[in-house]
Image (tube, rainbow, N blue to C red; front, side, top):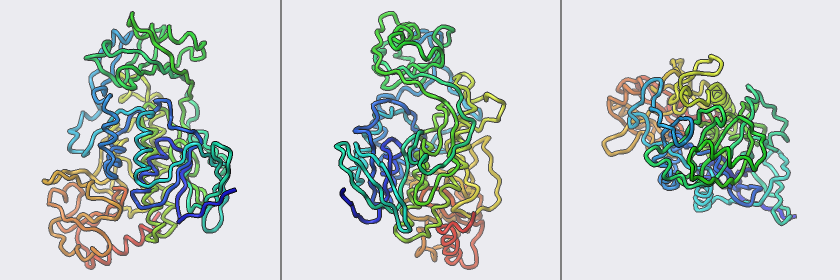
Length: 507
């Protein structure tokens, strides 16, 4: 048995999109991190494909957005939805949103993209290794024990050799079946199973068949082979998903896919047939001692809002700055309690909203399956709010019927481009930032505690403060505090609030 003693570090169990993103976020905050994954390589399956605009904002913050866009280049033109009796007869559907299509530059500095999981994971793995993360595939976490100052994590390599690593904290990103969650005895709640479905992953050159009608999803509307086609690389790799006759013999799927394609000269090569269970299962606790649940280990949701992996990546982003601040001694460990306080209600809401959305592309953004009101799709991505946690609530209203970002504590900082081309989001790094109005010179006295940036009067309107007011923004781009006008002692006020927030005294 080998005992590995390192500087205080975080161990991540699970090398999928969430675990690899967590490693990158932790390295951004200067945290030593070891990631272990029992598989010997990244996922061979396409699985998740949509990287939403909030996730891309987070990748932009840590400087990897352009590499992700490069990996997504094959599907850059495959954003549309289509529908028809077969793929050959399908027509593109008009892109609509309940509140109208926004001017994207006014709400975000980046764009969403499509990048299949088996394409994106190797990119994230390489970037993590380049940035100093210790990433070990073919290594399984078989046991962990916790004491007052950390954990002993027992690891087994593919060759059977065993080692024990000392860790300060452990992040479980080990999937929906999460052995770590089960070991901790954390129950799950939610709507439960919503049925069964199957994904048929196949290869066929369909570039001519889809040219001029490129799509992300193509709904097949016929009684014999209903389902949907998903683009994986826009030419050779595709998925056919259906909830009808999912247990048919594997040899029958090629003919089913051929009929749904309606392309006479297509010869689909079936690569894999995977059954899956859409459903809502949310862990009752996201934290147990020194262990934190992220991604599918914390929340399983149907894919109908394309939110599962994105929500998990955003879990990791929320947690990483808090671990970084605690490990470098700038925050009380009680700050880590706010991870569950903030992310559990958010994960529940997004999972619930995903569960009530219909897979029918014609009605997905307008009709729910049980009459529960749908949140605005853009609000679901950018506009959720932490009601309590590492922030100072101010009682201001908030809605999910539209994107409602006006500087409310607990919401994502509103994006505005400045004359130099930077977004307000680009001002946020690894520390807290105070964004003031143009008459807030006295706020400069807070520079010893936080970074201070003075913005123009239009910014004051954006966040509902006077010209001398300010908002305090956390490293995860979430507003922690808003003050309408300059207080008597601005530097002291900032120090007091920062102390409260980094101890998460306010619940």
